[in-house]
View 1 (cartoon, rainbow, N blue to C red):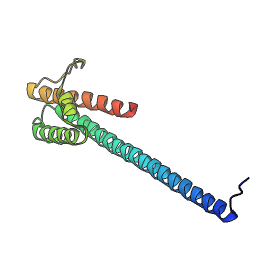
View 2: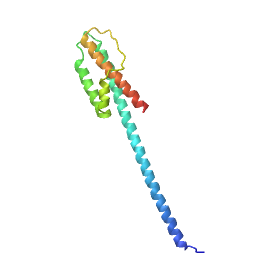
View 3: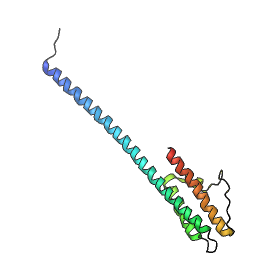
View 4: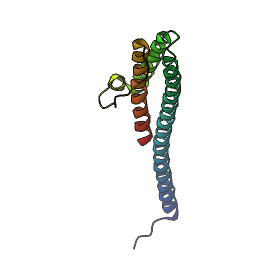
Length: 143
């Protein structure tokens, strides 16, 4: 019966530990990359949700301004708000979300006591954006 020299056993044992250590390091590095990607995605989602929340709050103030009919309609403020909302949605979520932002299908028909057509039209624009922004917020929470 052949008995391996003691030094050969130690060499093979050290080589085995080196290979195992290298494979473990590679696996841990891959897991770290995966976790970092998940964290980045979570942080980006949180940033998007926070910004959508801010847009929703701004929309509430714009709706309030639309209800004050004895003052000029807040067209400039609403146009600026729309531009910022659309740009953000396009940049962070893509063109398909921007299209959905402008879509009114499935939206309940809101009613208002606003008599001025200009004020009422602007109010409806804000309502439409808020309705769809709220849907985006819910979708982001579900994922």
